Image 1 (cartoon, rainbow, N blue to C red):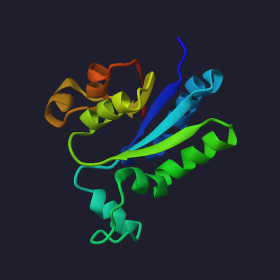
Image 2 (cartoon, rainbow, N blue to C red):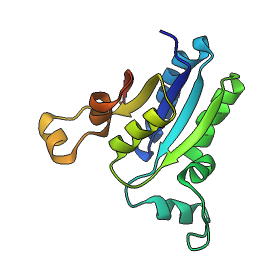
Image 3 (cartoon, helix red, strand yellow):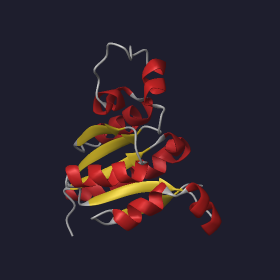
Length: 151
């Protein structure tokens, strides 16, 4: 199965496992010559906070989540790795709403062939109480999803 488009979902909780996630996306994209869509998932209700931390005026700026994601450190580092390997990539961002729903929508929008997401092991009770974005992506994505477990 050829992969022309790989979506890599990244959030703030992926900071410590970012290299492992990017490695997985590279393993899928490089042999196929695929484009990687680096998707930064801004935490619910934290989008404006992130913009302020990046010195972006939230009152006058009309920046989209894609544009803010392009400036985010957690996306720039993977982008530099992909570029150094000659892998095509695009940076996207989503904010607000349910993170797993946003990821699934973006998978559909970019017509990804496969998605890469990270997550942690959680007990069934923990999933029921707090939800599990990665699990929801696995269940609802219209494409295969590579789950990369965080240590």
